[in-house]
Each structure stands twice: as structure tokens, then as C-alpha cells.
Length: 280
Image (cartoon, rainbow, N blue to C red; front, side):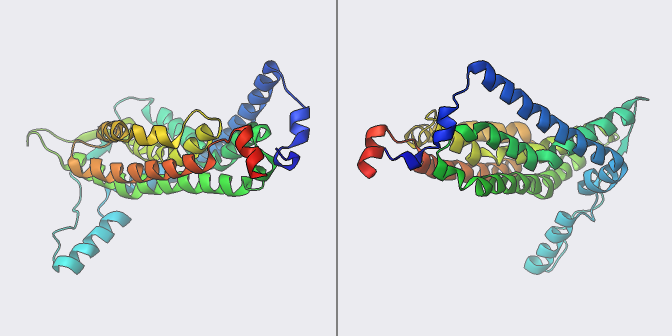
């Protein structure tokens, strides 16, 4: 096995288990500090985030609803796909609710803002286990992971959230029921869909690292493809409203990411020493 395949300096500086824990602690501390900074920014703009971003999908003027209406005009020359004003109001029932939700918005906003830096810290922690040639692509991996996360955020916010809010906001069990939703329910529901989608879209990166250390293989993913399909459908059913359309919309990108994960696992599967020797 060629020495240029390995970062000799890293191997010379072997770390004990406690030293690994100490290194992990500082990575976590720096990630937490970045999240706090992001949270402070989100807290300062809390009113804007709530009024414009979180409540955006509850209004018929939201970007996704406008594009859906334009699609209906193009396909059917009618307003059949247009979404009208939603028949519900957002209210508070506890004196401390708005204060608590302001901090909740700051916490979640901090995670989203700091995510690129958090990914950098994750990479720095696993960096000693990588070969020198693999470290050349560190910038690409971090950038790709950030892109996947924010693509998931956009998918959750512009696709899943409007569909879910429109379905649940207009769902009526009885005409005698007045629809008044609390601030906490609106914040938790929209952030769950949005942040959850961002995290789910990191699946290829998770597969990459699990395959790298030999825990996951492409053959295993192929073997349990049908089981994974059932799990994905269950997750989609839990996250989305109880309608088939939303479940399918969430399931499709996850299934695509799963197939991408199989390709990644196949390409990055660790080779044995004998295999490396024969390739030199």
C-alpha cells in the first residue's frame, strides 16, 4: 500500500479514547457557539420571521400558491388550482406563549443559520480518519452537504408546508367548529416540516460516512430496499397530513436520495489492504 494514500502525520499522532472525547467536546462547543450566534440573529428578526416566513404559507398570496394558480391558468384556463384565503386565525391562549415561541424561533433559526459551520466541525472531527487524497475533496463534501440541507429546507418550506397547511387549515369536521390555532402549534408544525426535510435530505452524506467506516454497504442497502420503502412511507405518513398526495410528494425525493446513497456506498466502500496493494 503506497504511503501517499495515508496521511502519515495523522497516523503518527495516535489519540487515546479520552483525547478523542476531548476533541469531540470542543467541536460540540464551537458548533453550539455558532448556533447561539445564529440564534441571536434569528431572535432580533423574530417578528419578521414569524410574520413573513412562518405565516407566509398560511396566506393565499404565498409564492407556492401563486405559482399553483398560474399553472391552473396555463393548463385549464381557470382558477381551479387557485387557493383562497384560509378560514382560520392564529391566537395565543397563554400569557407566556409568545415569549416562549420567540425563543423557539431563535433556537431553530440558529441551527439553520449555523448548519454550514456545524458541517465543517463534523468534517474536522472525522478528518484524521481520512486518507490524504480524500481530504482534497473536503470543500466539495461540505458544500454538497450544505446544498442538500438547504435544498431540503426549500423543499419543506415551499412544497410540503403549503400543501399541509392548506389541507389541515381548510379541513372541517363540523361547521360548528371555529378554527383557531395557537402560536405554538403553527410554529412547531411549520418548523417540523421544514427543518425535518432539511435533515432528511442529508441522507447521502450519512450514507457516505457510514459506508466509509464499513458499517453500511451498497449490498445491504439493496437487500433492504423494500423494507426501507415501507419505513419511508411510514415516516412520510407521520410527518405529513393524512392525505396520500403529501405522503407521495415527501416519499419521492427520499427514495431518490436512497438510490443515490446506494451509488455512494458502492463507490466509497473501504478496500482491504490486499485490494489496495493490487491497485498500486
